[in-house]
Image 1 (cartoon, rainbow, N blue to C red):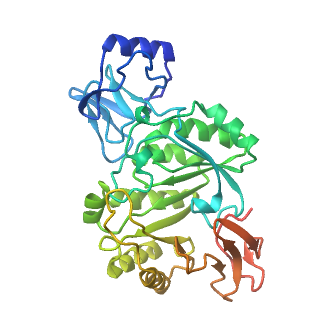
Image 2 (cartoon, rainbow, N blue to C red):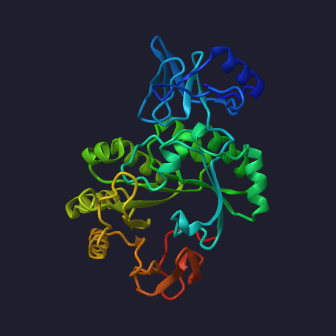
Image 3 (spheres, helix red, strand yellow):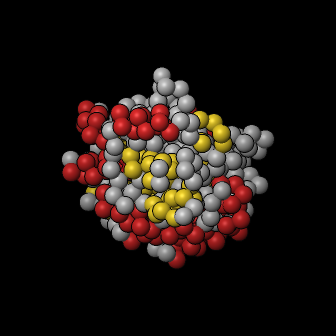
Length: 373
């Protein structure tokens, strides 16, 4: 279905007439309180109507929502037999970041990204870093009023080369991403998608023409761990990673190494073999160090030797560009896989020097895969 925005006045009028709505399957009235009714609503782009409610078609969760019920992501709601996003033009986080922070290491180094996020996520990760905004709905956060055209204005004013859809999960504020990305593309602004990759093929393919780069968080290489740690499944994420690359979107992959969850070396080896077998040997792989977060507060930080071994395993499998994030003892420099000289120097989230000319190592001429200008 095509997404259409109804007027705020009309939406408020309908909500008042309807009374309290059921939120996230509970009896809490999402729109209770006439002093502060919800002001943002946009009809969802992917759903179908069934005798039992509306079926969201955006991600593999395939939520079936009765009247007044929100989905697992907390920002999509069945209202009078139609599915609405309530995460449109109301970001709860707006920042200007270095592109390296996403992390994207082989994409426009030293550029700036205008970063936005709304509340909500289609995963429920026990280790969530941004749980204060991802594990709640837009009604529970302090939001900006920033429609897609205003995002473009702010991005240009901030002299940012890209817009990053990030922090929470951009799949769940898809309509906001889609309309903003279309406007950005027309203005020559890049679009970068920082995501868990849990999205259905149809919505992904519709969005891809407007995407320039993505970092996909590959949580693990185990379907069992995905279900127990994240509340999802593995295969849809692998499909997303392949689809992005096959459609010429620059892709980098991040894997968070969590003790007793994702620090199994055999699983890492299997993941890296899959990446190489599917043509990702020349794309960056980021192993990030875990620190206690959210519901894993008793889990210790990842030992540095575990990260070092993960990098060795990836390189032995054939991955040419492997980085260790959140690692105070290591370097995030890019090394030419042929002559072994440093071709991109980084300090923290800043790129300090680039020794690449026309996509090649300036010392030996080896191609360094990436988007460098």
